[in-house]
Length: 369
Image 1 (cartoon, rainbow, N blue to C red):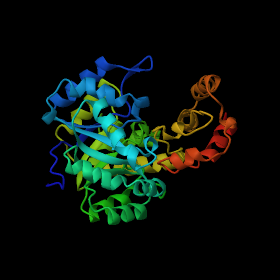
Image 2: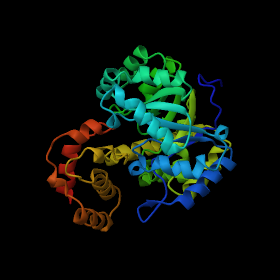
Image 3: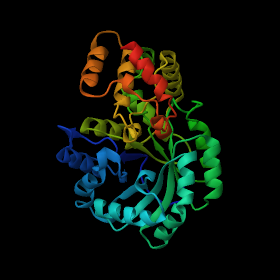
């Protein structure tokens, strides 16, 4: 199909939020191998942002991609994150620092990052949409859009007021499609109605869908030996109007697995969709915390509580029997502030794209461990 932007790419994009690391440092050698494998397979869409990988993602992709491949051979996406500007005068210097960090003269796509009801007002107050329009007119941005984390009514308001938006990056996966807190399906329908190109993020929900509950695994295993992640990514890629689906591939094994079924993409069959429905039921039966490990909460927590790590511990305890979740909890809590050190300020909940009631959930973690 024809896309509004005219971008020509395959249905798999490289999300640069979760890169390979060694001893806490980005493993550049592994990343270069992954970039090479990705490009050689005909994929060309890379998505970064300044806060990713503790401010190191942009520099890593400069070394692994930009310095090693012709500029016209790939699409590079970056984002305007509200944490890094306080007023209009700070937007251009921040943007220029991103160009420098990535080693490019322009971004193929530039997104207003993680928009929701609250920070949309900040973007408007700071005249951010007009500044981005000016940057586009100057050729420093080829296409402008938003990444979005809120309800469908908020997305409708934004797209109604900002007609220059070309791309909407949405969280959409088989667990969130009908989730009332995410409204993945409803947001998708709004983006389609406004005729926007759609990029999907979190198709595997931070890796959660790569490890479904036993009943979900059983349903998928009956289909063959494909990875559990493959069904999640193909599910997201099968929607009409989806330009590409971002996968945060943290190692070469993930990269090779993703490429194996996305190089020649086929939508899910009727049988595969039925297995997905069984996996959804299995997940919901466990009442797991729907945390994607994006770690935006860590940027604002004044006590530096490792919230996603504690949620992972509790989810593991709900899914798996045995001593391992408790051992991991002891390991985390020995080195970091404990859940009961939360001061209930609520900053984490405002930053959470999943709209989780983090303060109450931390109480649940404390109670269980």
